[in-house]
Length: 222
Image (cartoon, rainbow, N blue to C red; front, side, top):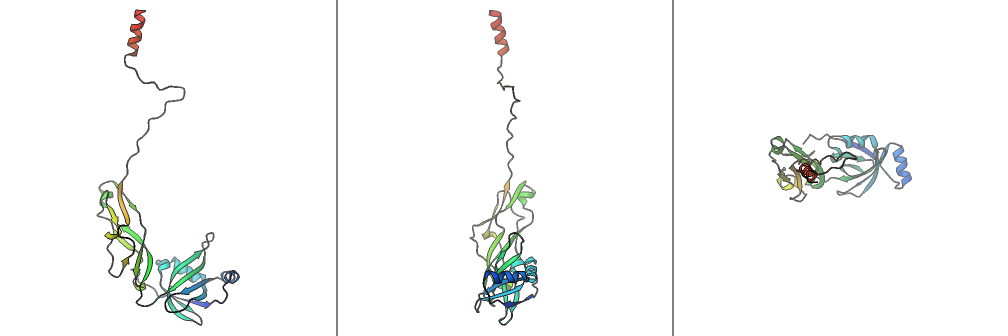
């Protein structure tokens, strides 16, 4: 797990809730936010787009823990819970942030990375197929991993890796069903090549053995 940087984003409380108010904030380079959870009430706020976008582009992305300091409300550690992205411009339009409480675990999605070259690929000519690329976990906010890495070096041809086969730190609980398939090593079968069709105008006739001989005998008798 990479060392986490301390990030603080300053925000202002948002009084208006309509589309016109949200549009005005976006034109000013701000993003409407809703902060909820923890021990406080839900708060509507607005924070600079540039700072939130930088967090989302960072190595830890939406799983980045940062401090949101709302003017007149106070500071609290938060995490992205949901976000709305403009499908055309790719710009953050709105975000829901979750307050974090010390000692309280949260449920979150993290990437799943496969490491190493499977034995079935290296020596058996197989192909590694990754079925699951994310895992749902329950963990304390400060223990959220950047990703869960799984070594697949020992996977042979036709082997299947399940969630139950993934070793994790005791502080992390995987919530996906244990029998969920994560990866497999299969064999690529060569497709049968169909015979080329006969050229147009030439009928493909089966060869008849002895046909010429019979015709010759018939001609001699007549």
